[in-house]
Amino acid sequence: MKLVDRTKISAAALALVSLSALSAGFLEATPAFAKDTQQHPAVLNASAVAVADKYAADAAEQIFKEGGNAVDAAVAIAFSLAVTYPEAGNIGGGGFMTLYVNGKPYFLDYRERAPLAATRTMYQDEQGNVIPGKSLYGYDAVGVPGTVEGMWEAQKRFGKLSWKQVLQPAIEYARDGFVVGELLAKRREEASKEFDGKTNFDQYFGNMKMGETFKQPDLANVLTRIANQGAKDFYDGKTADLIAASMKGHGLITKRDLQEYKAVWRQPVEANWNGYEVITAPPPSSGGVGLVQLLKMKADLAPQFKDVPLNSPQYIHLIAEIEKRVFADRAQYLGDPDFYKVPVAQLTDDAYIAKRAAEVDPDKPSDTKSVQAGLGTSMPEKAETTHFSVVDKWGNAVSNTYTINGYFGSGVVVPGAGIVLNDEMDDFSAKPGVPNMFGVVGSDANAIAPKKRPLSSMSPTILTKDGKVSLVIGTPGGSRIFTSIFQVINNIYDFKMPLKDAVGAMRFHHQLLPPNTIFWEPYEPINGDLAKQVEAKGYVLKGQDFNGDIQAIRIDGDTPEAVADPRGRGVTRIVQ
Ligand code: GLY
Image (cartoon, rainbow, N blue to C red):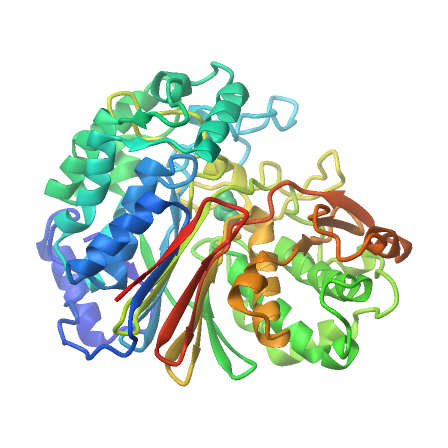
């Protein structure tokens, strides 16, 4: 049994895990935890999803109609997106799932891990310089994928339907094909240019054209084997052999890496905020800690925010001041908790956050150097990734963000398997302790080590009130993930905006470095003078063409409302 549970589980459940670890084979079909088979009465008048494409939404709808719950729908979505949203959906990457099931919070970490042969300096040349692109493209960039085991563990623990049922939509999309839309075709074209024949990307995706049906027979075979054999096929069967064979002579991942891969049930980060319980991602995500710090610091600064209009120059300044402090902590303290003791409780402690809030200068940007707890990993981070939110009529919720890092990951497609492999190794600090060309020093907390998980910003989040789900939210966006979620939560709860407007509103981002730089969406100014007024406060404004792709569900009474970000091709479904 490959499961590790770091949540508060009962001694009986622990005994069950260790007993099965002794007696059972690798990734066997027996679930680690007895399923909660209790039938609960419906508490909502519908189930709902917000997801990055319509094919995955169709899959979720089918699963709900077959009697599946939020976890069944989530797993069906994850496998479907691996086929129909191949730029970020995946089985060759990893991610985080925050769940609220039968009134209890859970968090599943299925982030990729560094291969056993990985070293701290593997992306440096003999002079100790970081080799450009080595952690981004090709076999060297790939971390050991976790998505299949993550989905397996979640579905085995909480799903109602059979494993085969939830795989079926993805198998059909891969085998029979799906019609390629404009945005996917555009991203494919850009990826082809970026990989520029340096990987085998075009052999698999070169003929993907807008408006045409695209089939992936190798991937269909992999998904069919996974449906029949469970995660075992991916980690110890024919698919594992294909992945390991593709790496020979090119990359570091071996069959042993796959066999030893573990998903981890962790204690989610939880915080009381504004009468809500915020349930979000713990390390190796920096996002949950960051989100809680942002929310609490803004609450502490309520007098400063009084009567300050949304997205006004003063609002942008105050939020940037908060973000500056959050990113300073992120740089210093966040990494894989299995390798580095991350002080989560201290970082989210009310008194500590009040102290940091008191340092905010209401008039002008604080000096960057005086804020930082230690200049850190604010290196450019890939913004892609994808998120989906799900609730079922029994009141369960899944908030899932998963990734292959950049669009189409490393550009490597496993020959004979059609699996796009991630470039998640780029999320480690390639050169900890030494300033890079921007004067940025990578933190030791996020140095490369065998089996270690790279620091992430993915922050699948659920808000509950009085034990009932109120909001399910998440987004891609690299380091912009948790600042985006933060802004949408502000829009909903502080500015009382309808969900659609809250998600659609302009977003901006500051992350300590580059100094006093605000990334924003210049195409939607509140008024023509906004840029000038923000610059007059001492900031540099930079446009950014990717501002996330929020997928959110809000529950009002017994009615769920779902919104997909207008910035992407996401859709929503309400299923009675
Ligand atoms: N690769 C993006 C993230 O993990 O946040």
